[in-house]
Image (cartoon, rainbow, N blue to C red; front, side, top):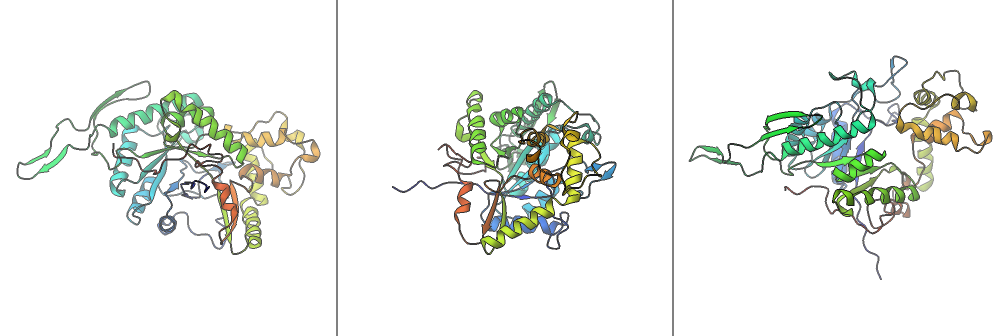
Length: 411
């Protein structure tokens, strides 16, 4: 009996935001010049990838009052890049990370509807929130929202944009030259929305786009983020790098769908994978070590751990041992997404099991080799099978399968 074919969806992530990059490597290209974006997009399309994904940061990273230049410093606006990529690709989905905390629904809806028109129905939206006042200083409203309020606003934001998208049915434009009639319905685009976050009314000025609305992604791993995905997203990104953790994540997210009136196949799960390619296994393994050392150099390790613990660690040797009491007593990591660092410390089997500074930073910043980090030779090999895990698109797919397409129907 033959095994059923597995279906996976592939996306290319352009690094630079929320990544430890190797921009200093002689072989690295620009993270600003359009040619770099176009090269990755065309390569992904040629390889039959579903979509290309851009993360986004709304403020330059700073540390001790200085720009944090160990990562990529600044990048062009996401919508501008994706609109330009629509002109040099034909089939590739174009996914952008757009914030729901500091933007406004009308503006974002116009931008995504426009991108969907320009790309012929290939727009996708990774809906994110911001948790820190540091980013908020860049915006008129400023400040920040607690986690539960962030996702409450995100849900209201998404509902509002969908009302705007749906204010056009898609059949209003008739453009009858002989009769001199452009619109069949004079009420096209009219909307009115009022809730605790938004009170807007008027006319939405972008006619219905090919998809009707963009494909919606969610990347949050908190309880609120998972619930948001179960209620509203078409796909959720998974950061879990082991088969066991992937299965647990899969089961948790899928069980939430029923209470929102959705079936298990209505939410796609996309685990992250990092590839290192070379002509042989040995060469790939050696290259992976070189890349990792560039990603977490001694300087980067110290800077990263200073961010985690919000204290000066310049006196520490990144390659030497550390004194755990100084870093575990009365110190908590900054930001909920960095809790993994504290867990590494708390789970260590005594002082002998505690990693050094550089190793600790490396373990926090990147997943181990496995589903989250694959080392591959160029020839087909069994390593790639780790991506499938089960019949679905997530590790331990559980037989639920995945949607055939990421692109949405027009209605």
